[in-house]
Every structure is written in structure tokens, then in C-alpha cells.
Image 1 (cartoon, one colour):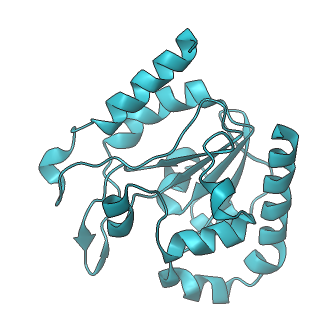
Image 2 (cartoon, one colour):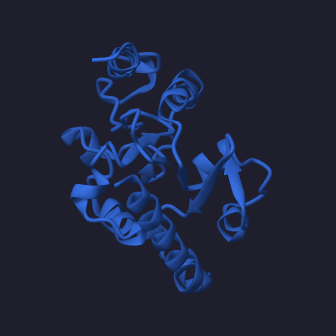
Length: 199
């Protein structure tokens, strides 16, 4: 194992033992992520849901199934950390608020994202949902504007923005048919190209 790999393993261990927001969580901390320094794509989502918290597997729910369909990936490719790093805005399940998952804790991204991305250096970034979009592309006033805009970059890396694939966003999808008609084919094509170049 190289020095870089050892440093990355040490970083992952620190994240998985993180307790900086333990006081605010409804369950014991269980940071859920999947990452390798070799990942060609970095996907930044919201926060693990209860199922992901219980299984320690990111996107382990119906939203994850829809997200994989959007990306054109099967489960084995999606969970291959040498292809795809899966990093949430909040690493632990934040509990519920007003009948839905609470927002991701704000401590996580400032504490860990920069260190992770310094190692991974992906060819493509994918931001899923408004929390990731607001953090990394705050110049867009709405998620819709960010999804629809072309030529977005984060840290100099080509970046795609998706709405959260939750069923709660079915109304948004119905109101914006251009997402499935135009954006999703482009997303699938871009993801396939990056993975092909990685192989």
C-alpha cells in the first residue's frame, strides 16, 4: 500500500468514526459513504435515509433504484468505488422533520469534503438534490436553474446536477418534462463515456 493509499484509508477511518454531531442525531452515528481515490465519478447527495443507516449502504432504497436508472448504472457498477465515489452532504441519518427526512447536518461537508476531494480528483461530479447544489453551485438561485444550465464546473471538474430521485419530487418531474426528455439522456451518455474511458 502506497503512502497516499494509507493516508486515504486513515481519512476514511476518521470519517467513519466521526461524532461531531452526535448530540443532534436520533441514532448513534453511522457515517455512510463509499469512496476510493481512484473513482472517476464523485456523486454528492443529501444524507442517508433510515434504510441506508441500517444497512450501512448508500442509496439503499427506492430513491437509489431510481437514481441508478437515471445514471444508466446497475448496482454492481454503482457500488464499485473505483468507478463511483458516493459522498453525502451529511454522513449520518439526520432523523425526521415534518414527516420527511430532516436536512443533512451542516457540520459534515466543511469537515470532510475538501479532504476527500483532494484525494479523489474525479473526472465528473454529480450533485443530487438542492443541498449539494446550494453548497457547491450557489450561483444558481434554484435547483431547476442548476439542472437546466450547461457547462457547470466544481473545482474545475465537469459537473451535472440532478433533482433528488425521491418520489416526493414526482410533481417536479411532471412539471419539467425536459429533464427526462433532454437532460437524462445527456447524463447517461456522460456517465457511460467517463466509465468507458476509465476501463
